[in-house]
Length: 286
Ligand SMILES: [Fe+2]
Ligand SMILES: [Fe+2]
Image 1: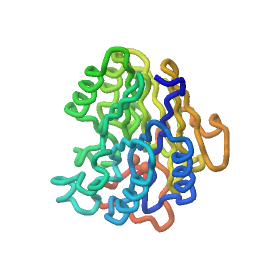
Image 2: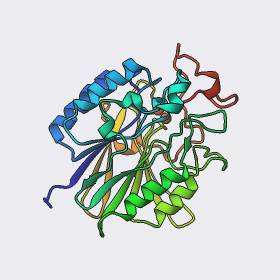
Image 3: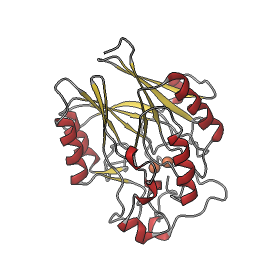
């Protein structure tokens, strides 16, 4: 293993359709200049899963000169075409399908995906996360099969916060997933969806788990400028630096906790979501 630390760029919520092109040009140049060992994109690469949005996303992702792993966000499932959503939900990833939920092995560290998006849910708001038993089992099996001494860096779209608990209604079965991850050599869980960066310790039934969120590279900013996380791993410690065009320091970019309402305000002129995805009482989908 080289002396150089492992370098991972953690990007999220690019939302092609409302992307920030200045930020994307900068990130692309940073990838070319710094040559990270991996680029982990934690979902929401499009705004409404439209074909033209996917085309733009795929061109940009393919232009990155680094191994990429890509999570599926709630915005990346067919939005207006429900038949496609049910029967071929990942078809639009054609061209970058090899990056979708791809495990990446790095020195002493493996990036292991965890799916938190579902094509349908028994509730009104489909923007929230749902970890099925099969998705969790797949991730846990991948972790358990890692070579001894290898740590796992889990990638998900939604932060692993339980649905139904006070103020943290983000991911159904999130608490169960966290508890299982806490029993394994998981150095952190990377996620997106919130559009602000964070780096927190989350308690679970089996102990604490570190949860790291990346901000957005879209125009849908919440409380901080467009950003991504630069993560370094020296074999023992994982460090996070939030990079942003405004050159604000990391503490100014990170929120203290996953917010109760993780949704940004609706953009002027932004279309209202289809009826079956619109929460009646919640803010617009994120
Ligand atoms: Fe998003
Ligand atoms: Fe999202």
